[in-house]
Length: 222
Image (cartoon, rainbow, N blue to C red):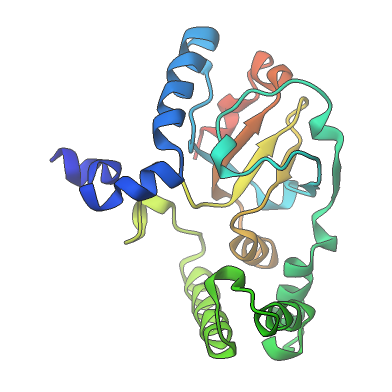
């Protein structure tokens, strides 16, 4: 039962645990709970957000990715942002899903193809065929999401690993401003294009002012 409920305990997932820094996140959760009490953020926590209110992309340095999920970080990092609509993935998804542009003719596809031709492996695609197959799968995700009327949480997916790890990563600024970070960009684009009312997201970094003001509470409600 423990294995069924906690994939991080699978021996086959131990290397993945280390890559995702699960042991460090476990300690972080304990420290957060000791410092902030019952309202403490949890690493890889599932939150629920309106995608139409996520209008900014975090652009600061250092990068804050999935490994920093659940960290409480003071300072002005949350002011380093730009509009999400300027992101190449959202632009290309709009071109394809709203305008009917073939994936191959979008700036995103051409960018990734250039990286592959230079020896890179963007989005785990080593060949042009891999890239084509990836965007065919994305078309399927779009159609399934449109029919269902919602995005699935990670717990509903076969590749479920830990909480909402692998979901759309969102940081929470001092006043509750939501900042999309790297991770889940295509699914986020789909949710905005379909104007979904609420989507599951992986909690990223939280500003202490947002935590003090209790702004996480409403994000924890489906």
